[in-house]
Image (tube, rainbow, N blue to C red; front, side, top):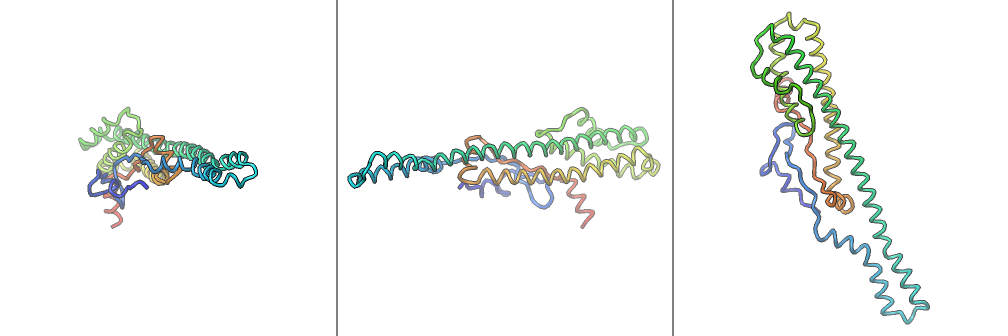
Amino acid sequence: MYDMANLLDEVTGPVNDNGRDVRVIDRQLPVEIGFGSMLFEIALWTVIPCLVLLYVFLFGDTLENTLAFAVFGCVIGILPGVIFVFMKISAHNYFQQLEQRIQAEASNIDNYLEQRVQILQNVVGLVEKAIGLDKEVMTTVAALRGGKVNGTNREEVSRQTDMAFGRLFPQVEAYPELKAHNAIADAMQQNSYLQREITAARTVYNSRVTQWNNDIFCWPTKMIVAARQGYTTRIPFTVSADTRERARDKFF
């Protein structure tokens, strides 16, 4: 089996401090197989036929039809290899389907994040003339404007959006007339709704990622297929550190 103990090490490995109760290992691990796996596959095809041929060589004189016995024994003997080929095909199809599910869940998160960014930009547009907004909020909004959310920037967009809302809403709440503004009140409600949707989508996505990370190291069939396909572990989508700290402040 592939030894993950040292590679997934919070002490020596790169760690993403985002997350809620655990520290997430910020590393993609490749699946690697050694000589033992290759020997296992060869054995599936050759062990029984070799035993049959050895038996024929040693006791062929006692058999009525040596050739028929040898041919039949060899055909039956390669069945484990044939069965394993179909198992690998099944595993390959399984990984493709799981990958599609992971991508679909990631797309849901990205869509919700883009909606949050749009709400942030709308709220800033409504209040920036009425109050002096935090310069960092304005910088964040400018950086997010026009950007698409995808796998390469998902964590960063989430972190920046959480930080901006965390700084923006306390400023809005300090002005009752702004907080009572219908558009701003609606935006705050929509943001809360999207936060809940992102939490739910993140839970499903991370569950799929955990399933993927476990399955690709499941020897022999899935691990061999994963190694041949060049698969790696996937990094879960985490709660930003700012959001985690605010949650702890509220509940504890």
